[in-house]
Image 1 (cartoon, rainbow, N blue to C red):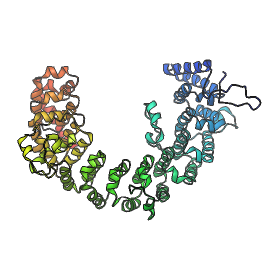
Image 2 (tube, helix red, strand yellow; image 1 turned 60 degrees about the vertical axis):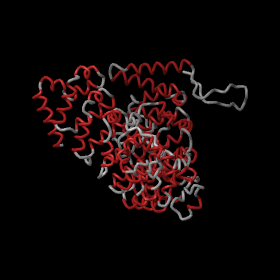
Image 3 (tube, helix red, strand yellow; image 1 turned 90 degrees about the vertical axis):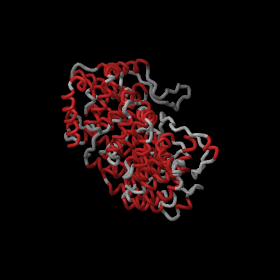
Image 4 (cartoon, helix red, strand yellow; image 1 turned 120 degrees about the vertical axis):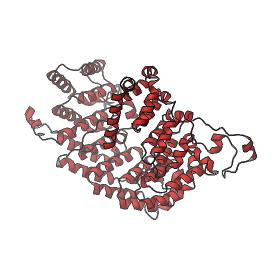
Length: 599
């Protein structure tokens, strides 16, 4: 086959046409399309498959790089690699080793190399590497381990360029995973564009123990990356910062002590914890790193991976006294959310909470809802500041005074509207009703068909508080129509789920909810989200409550069976047995309840 290669310039003449990178002759491309058809069609037996793969790999030996640079052919090779054995993988990597630079920096060939590299942990962690040479009795052929070490050496030589290269940076990331024997999250290894083009999840390999020479390469690669001349600039550059994040994640699993050392080095290089850091802050009073999109992601990793001592130092020097600045910044607020996720000391949390508690309404006004959600989550997790949080939240939604307004917290959080907006009143923050608002009666039943995601999450945390009464009382004050709207909403249904699953909510309150929903079970059962909420109610109900629920649904058996969601409720609740074999139904449900209680 004749393959068209890269752009080439002939020094002897300027009249020769330039050849485009990745463009194959039609006959070559057709060959690989036929290969793709054969792969899709499958093989009758293992022998046929091995013969076919061997033939294609033999063909690729001479043209692997040029073919891998073609968009269509590269994806076909990636599919082929999933069928390759150890020796065939070695042959392909050997072909790529003829020009590491081109393969690492090419848009499509780099993906093929990534695919090959991800197969290596499964081979190198097993014994029998030396048999590869014996198979063809060729001592000049390099083993997989040797090829991997050669690639590591090459990447180390070009690390300055590769860490910020559009395609080579992906090779560096995967290489760190492979030599470390640890597979990290897909979102750190593949770009958004790459993940969008390929909907399949990244192949994750199991943690494995790599050979000693390979393990040593993790240390040398680490030293090269952390000794970059422009390390400070790399901390805010999109591609290089993800390389550093991958490095830290791998080290966290393989060498925690070294990971901590490099976490501290990054903090030192960025001057985040130094006394002079204030001089380097932007006009907003925050360090540039946390205001940068890429830098903020790195900061989140540092918070997640740092030791308690370093975490404590970050809290004291970086966040205390600046929590509100973080909360209102478009990018730094995500770092603050990570702080709440990782914080373990309730005293530290109380300090940050005090700074933010009087500004909840301001934070909500600029739509940084995730900050408030994380505050609620931390209040629940650390079991502190719960009453204060509810009080300040009610003040933020203007329903703290007068007292009767407090039962409206569920509709207000669901819609993320203040009391005056939702109920169309002219009352000021203090809660004193004006004459106009008294004359104009407020609607008593605002619809709950639209539920905000963050509002739902906050309510779920409130239902898990030690005293969930503010959220419980508000839920029980809703009329059946509002409860059904809430349960049939994608976000609202999770509020109903949490209400029944929470150990803080009393059985008496759950019984009241069941009574309020009587007459609405069919509507719930025939709703996509409502049926899921109804399933949770069923799972948490007593035999008496289940009997009442089944009694109501049994009157509409035909409608249940004819509905795409209702038929599952008909089956799960054994409505047929309830109607025709009531005694057996009671025994079955009683046994299930006992089994659940024992678990």
